[in-house]
Image (cartoon, rainbow over all chains, first blue to last red; front, side):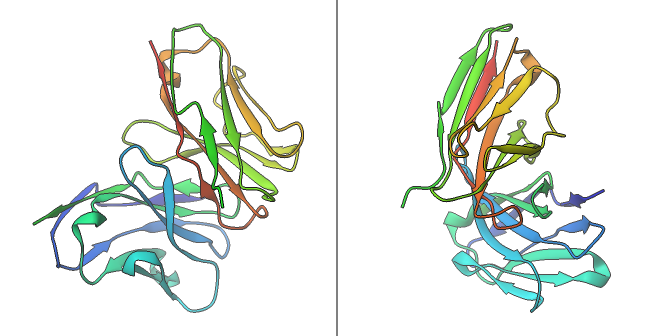
Length: 110
Length: 113
């Protein structure tokens, strides 16, 4: 069975500081991995995805993620956070049927 | 350059009423998905269409939930005899093909009183 664990429910970070969100997955084959962001009252916006190839993936808004098969992880990073990055972040795994984690809420303080 | 659209955006129903939620996918997208997102949770898969064929409905929580996509474009998720536990945001997504990136609509927030 496929599943995703996001260990951090809530993270608070200062504007300009770095951010790392953790994601661990369980999947029987080579995983398709995704990070989505959701602002209040909005749908999910794709930040980046990993299907195969280079394990360091670049996304929109300055985000990147690294696929580590040995650790079953796909952590999301951003070097310098902006106030507009405050949102909920979801990691997902799957081919057509996506399984999502419970999400990590990011708060940005001035 | 329209994305996935959903209507209505908000729906309030009395317990026992039937509701219908609509999804317009991105033009040309073959695959369409429905997810249910309870408050404070991640989305959970409900069902998947490829064109008009419903290939997977394993996530539908009960036989009160029914989805269709008769012409391979617009889809409707119907919930009969709504219950309070059906209160959630219902998200629709579409993709070019089954294993491609899914693009999500804004969702319909259903509140059952």
